[in-house]
Length: 319
Image (cartoon, rainbow, N blue to C red; front, side, top):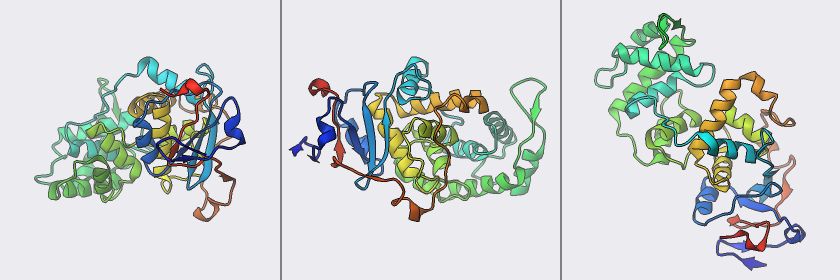
């Protein structure tokens, strides 16, 4: 038993192997925060990484080779090669960003959502001083919407549903002072009808540039499950904070910005569409598991537990 300054490390037989497991205890975003307080070596191809929750291993994966599509190493390498520090902003203010993100999401193509947002803005319908009626917003969304391509128009899929949500958002944004701290802002945004943890995180990431939140959409979920960075027993939106904590810890280990990693995965899989699914490692899927089954299905005892434990492949591994 040793103490590494972060907590007590209980060594086991597996910890005596040449390549010892790296174990991170996920508690909200705490693991990623603690990881940033030290300088870590990026895992090697044979490194085993384990994410644990409440003292039980939730997921275990090999870092893998960068040239093997879909491995944790692959996405980190791709993100480091050409995605840089992307400007994620869609609007020019919290109000505009909220409306732009509300119009997007599941069931709406990103290009259509952006065109719809710009269409509402050009009509003066994104205003908190004099909030327009839902009927006016719906009428604008139901029109053929021009795009950046001359002569090309698109149809927005949910004019009635989203018009009410846009109005509700404008009313709250105009009547209350939004918090400035990222996590508080996310919670505040989730009080607006139609905004869940993913959309709220998306707005916060875009407006604040915070790296303490992550946008866990279907592309990130699918890539993370295939790479085994996420547990297939986690369910959205119930386990959003677990998905987020795992993604942030993964980014820290890869020495890459979570925003850059997110942008890389999203753009690659969004561009490939269904064809991209066949490129990812198989054996995982998007599952929905009742809360009562989470603890009893497949969780293995954690043999090395502390707030955050890092076991390096070699004694010289720590810097």
